[in-house]
Image 1: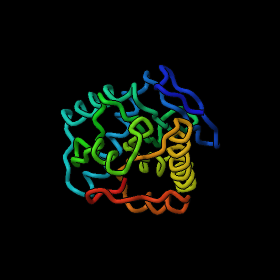
Image 2: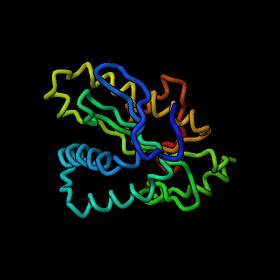
Image 3: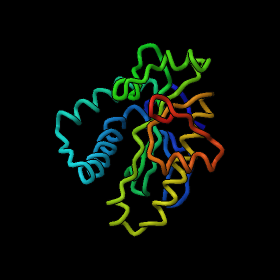
Image 4: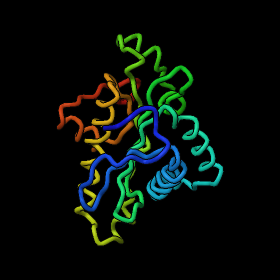
Length: 195
């Protein structure tokens, strides 16, 4: 079971050899953030020509340290403890600015009013990534990639359920949206985004 607020140290949630599902603690937020930044840097740089900088990483680290007390961080780890996949969910709080607000201009409070959503039961998920390069080089490969993909989807939902979330905002690619719809979780579009 996941706990909130974010614990100081990691908590093992489940084991699915060779993957251990972990609630990442505050003591590993920097490692988690560097992992996610690396995954995004490789994926986005390859597709869109983005050249990640140390300043980009520092901005992300600052944001994660601000958000971490309000978050649930899922880590999917290999037997050596290294993170191979991750996703982060943040509970709404008046002091929190969701990435969907900062990056895409979504007004969370207005959206909640329009849809009669209790802000105290609203969460935002992002920072979802799998390190495909490390998996390709490991002995686990494609089979573990499929396992981590399924576990990420299920555990992001499980964490939200454990936290009592009624609504969940996320930015995602169509593959994740289809996977969620297969599980009975239907999305709505908000100003061109799915929430």
